[in-house]
Length: 305
View 1 (cartoon, rainbow, N blue to C red):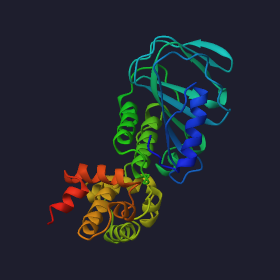
View 2 (view 1 turned 180 degrees about the vertical axis):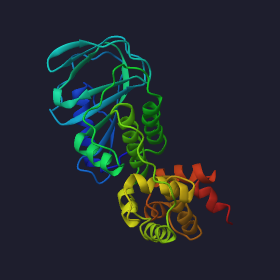
View 3 (view 1 turned 60 degrees about the horizontal axis):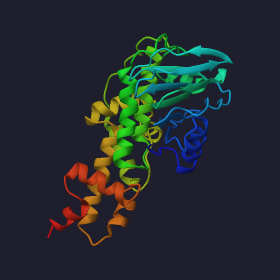
View 4 (view 1 turned 135 degrees about the vertical axis):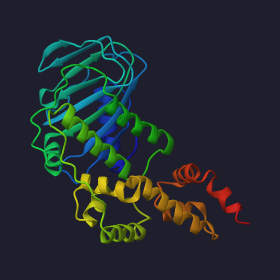
């Protein structure tokens, strides 16, 4: 998974979840969004049944939403020590756990799912930002497929599979904002959030551009960019898309590659260009550059001569 909040934090999360589900490790990513608690996305998979029920999570005022990438037919759960037989879960099916109930599960077949975790405090924070009332609960009356949630989970998995660890959080921030907007409507019973249309003002565009160009050698978050424009995170993301014709994470990658091309014209080692342009490492730099330019950085440099 994409490391969006520091390798130490995600390593601890991955090890803790891995033990809970009897796996060596559960790759995880976090999106802080400036809220009290991060939104956590983890990927858990096994080619065999669980050897025992999951270890109970610590009781916390949060929800875990599991979106399954393979169907499940042999699953049991215990909610507050009461057994509940789970019906067939299709590919893309969603099961919601209230973590105050310290749920336990036993999956008696191979499995693969993505797990989103969000606290009530973070839901309240994001609901206020969206102009919504507070969400009292999240409910999925059935385990029907949810293609939106499945797409968000797979987008994160596929990005990590290609790029590996990244320093920027803009992609995971965008996934987290879309995740909340979706679950608030589908599972929280809220209506469509008020639409705040419009584009960024010239001063906002200029301020964002200047700040990003001055910080291209480090990670960038949606919280920092939104603060520059004096906007909420979700409002900024929508207005940025309308103003620039692309989401913030893609625009930032283009700016990093733009600077890298200028540096490639000089006799600077690729490793130094990678760090100077804010890429996680030289491998990450090569993958991003190749995806956008069609050739590796080394090949692009050779074409200059």
